[in-house]
Length: 77
Image (cartoon, rainbow, N blue to C red; front, top):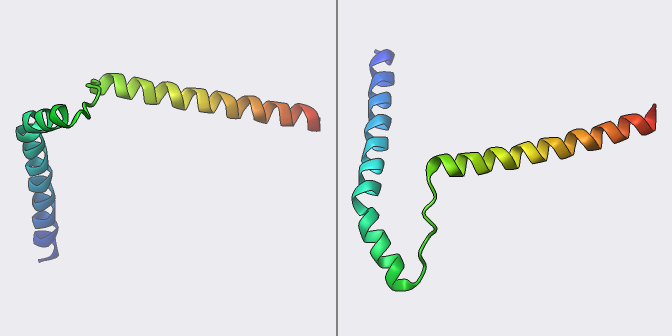
């Protein structure tokens, strides 16, 4: 019987995710109009561009950490 509850939770979460995506998609034009009227327009950035910028930021962070670790090792050796 536990398996049935797990299945029900899975489908409930899936339905909730689809509902939120659908609402976001349907209300997007309304949001744009409200933001334009309020003067708070958001820069429209594509998902891939956001992903690339986050990836580049993570790469820079890792690079800084590696350089800092190398300096510590060289000082200690």
